[in-house]
Image (tube, rainbow, N blue to C red; front, side):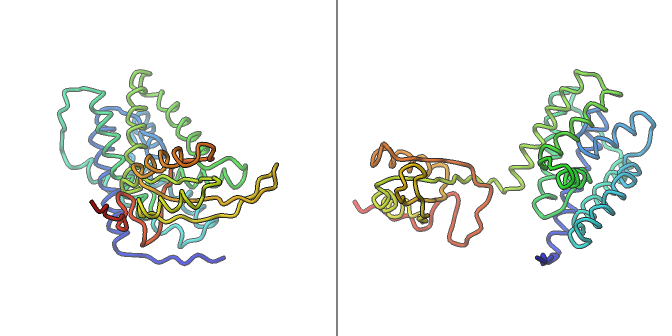
Length: 293
C-alpha cells in the first residue's frame, strides 16, 4: 500500500520553530550547565565534553548516515520532515553558540534541569506534532524493531540509557540525576504538546442493560455509542459491547451511571491518544442537552 505524502508549508514552519526552541534550551541550559541529554543530541554533548567538538558537526556527521539509512528503508518522501527537523536543530545550535546570552539561575541545578526539560519538550513536541524529528535515534529504534522484533519504545529507551551511561564520562552521578529530571520533564511536555493537551478516555462496557446505559449516555451526556457484537467464550451467549469515547469528566459520570444501572456490568476504561472525527469534542459535547427545570 502506497502512502500519500502531502507536504504543507505550515508543517515546515512549525518544525523549524520547534527545532529553534529545542536548540535554545540545549545551548543555554544543557551545554552551559553540563546537563546531559538523551538521544543523538546527548551523544553530541559527550563528544563536545571529551574532545571539544562542536555538537553541530557531530550531529550532522552522526545523523547523515542514519538519514540515508532511513531513506533507503522507509522511502525518501517519508524522511523529508525528519531531514528538516535535524538540519534546523543543528543549524540553530550552531547559531546560538555564537550569540552571547547568559541565563542567571544562581547555579540551581534543579531549576536548570526543570527549565531545560520544559524548553526541550516544547520544541520537541512541536517538531513531533508536525511530523518531524530532531535526531536519528528513532531511525535506529525502527531498524532494531524490524530486525530484532524489539518494540520501538523499548529500543528508544535502550538507546537513551546507553547515551546516559556514556555521559558519565564527563559528568558525575549527582549531575546525572539532574539529567534524568530534565529527561522526565522533556517526555511529559512532549506528550502534552504533541497531543495538544488532549485528554480523552475510551470505555468498553458489557452489560445486559446495554439499551438503558446507551440511552442515558446519548441523552444525558450527548455522546455517541457504538455497539459491537460480542460472544462469551464460556457461555456462548451473544452480548452487546458498547464502545464510547468521553472526556475525563464524562467518563467518571458514565462509571457512576453504569454502577447504578447494572452492578454486574463489565467496564474497561483506557486512555485514548487521539480521536479524528468532526463530531467529537474532547472537553465538552456540543450535543449535550439542556436540562429543563
